[in-house]
Image (cartoon, rainbow, N blue to C red; front, side, top):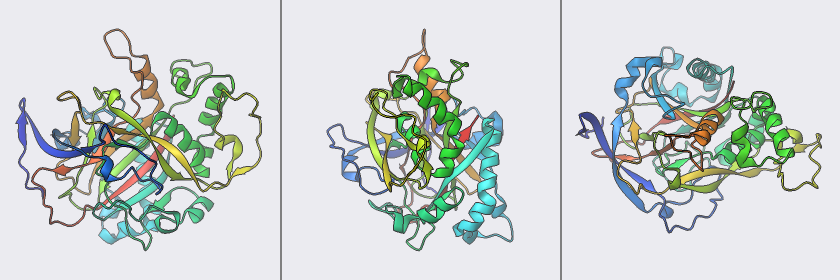
Length: 392
């Protein structure tokens, strides 16, 4: 258990933690390792900030005051069958049990909480090591059996191989920019692209007509129902496998996070095999001599670049509103929104007394952090992150 003592801010219990932000003078090169952010040397701005503990909200269930479409996160008590006999802690290391039992549980949870029609788990990441600059899922050979996973249904299983689990990411970031999310559904996994076919076709139709990528947010189905883009979102369902005593996960509310602090950077991601080219192609509407009607063939590239965001440290006190679940237990999940085109559209169209963002908010900034008073001598945090793509 953490030995930290909550501070009190305006009558609300809170904690303090150290966050690592990218330095404003950092030179950001693409990290060649799969899924890896730039090296720690770029994250020189270490800032201690207050956090709000959302543990009390877990008892509220669906009445939680923390909403995905407003704050970008929420929390739930969500025990799994794997928490009961005959299963043990070691059961969570078995990829076959995760696929057979936990993946269906998560998909049903996402459908219930969000109201989406379809939920597809596309990856599961096991973390059980202390932070290292290059961890076990940095390459296809050590991180996951990507070829085997691509031959069957989702998800990709990462950190379950003999190379060991991944490590926490103590770098303030958001995994997907809007263009990164759109690239992801096209190139990450064949079954993900097939599940997203209606979305991709709607977006590609607009792109072929000359609409630019950054303007797709203005054509969400909720705004233009005749030819709009169906709603879709990417979530991370984050669960510890033992009570968190060090390096917890924090989320910074979307409500007031200044997008002027966003720092774009590309991540290297593995590319799925056998994705039909009409789903995998990246259309550039400014290049009209390209045959956009080609619908045969498959993508066979091994990796692709996916847009994401880092963040500068807050320039104004209180502008980064951090939250976490104190002493998070295996039955507690943190529901993290990585992208939602509904939020993207809503954010870009806010007017009157609200702020219209030139860079729309579409997901929640998050990071592992050092909680004041945490036990640095304790064992590495153990967690399972399951990424889910939802369609309405």
